[in-house]
Length: 271
Image (cartoon, rainbow, N blue to C red; front, top):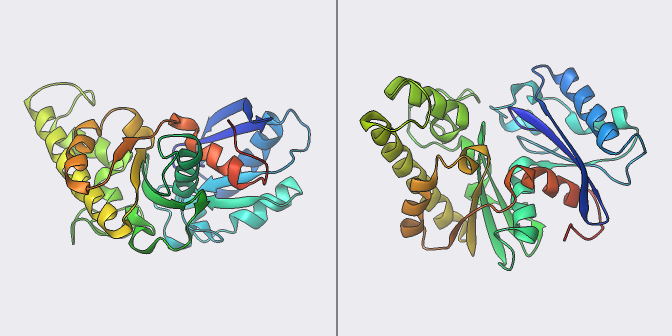
C-alpha cells in the first residue's frame, strides 16, 4: 500500500501468478476492505498460504511515526484489522524495507551484504537489509523521508517542515515543477533544466548523507519517481558523492509487493 496505489501480487512456486493494482482509497476502513479484497482476488478465491503486507510508516502502528503520504493510516492498527478481515495472521512491514528486501535478494542489491534502499514514490522512505534480513536497527536511516533537509522549509504531509519528502516526494516534485516551470512535467526548456539541476543537487546531497550514516555496500534507488527517470541526473551526481555503488532498482513497481511476499513466508523467494 502506497500513497497513490495498492499493488497485490500472488507468488506461487517462485513465480508471480497474478497481480492487481488499484488506487489507494482515501479512508482507512476502505483501505482495509480493499486490501482484503485484493488478497482474495489475486489468490483466486482460495485461502493463501501466507500474506505479507507493506505500507508507509513503522509497524506495529504504521502511522505512528507520521505516514505523511498515507494519512489514513495515522495511529490505526492496520495489522490487527487486516488479520480480522482476512481471518488469518499476516506479516506487516514498512514499504521501503520490503523494497530493499526484494532488491537485496532478487534485484540490484543481489550479492551485497549490507543493502541500503532509498524509495522515491508519492512519499520518500529508506530500508536497510543485512545478509538478506531486514535490519531493525536503521539508526539515522529510520524514517529518513521525514528527516530534516531544509530547517523551517516546506510543509510536509507529516506535519513537519523541511523534510526530505517535502522536496523529493512525487507530490512535492509535481508542485515545485508547476511553481518553477508550469506545463507538462518533464518538458525541456531553460526553467525545466534549472528545476532538474536543483532536484539533482538535493537528491545527491541527501543520498550522500544517508550513505555516510548507514555505510552500506550498495545503495539501491527505486520507486515511481525514480522509475520515471526524474532522478537520473541526481543519481549520477550521487555516485560521485556517496563513496559506495549507487544502483537503480531492478524490479520496478513490483519490488515492494515482492518484498512483502518474501517477508510473509518462510518459503524460498522467487527465482
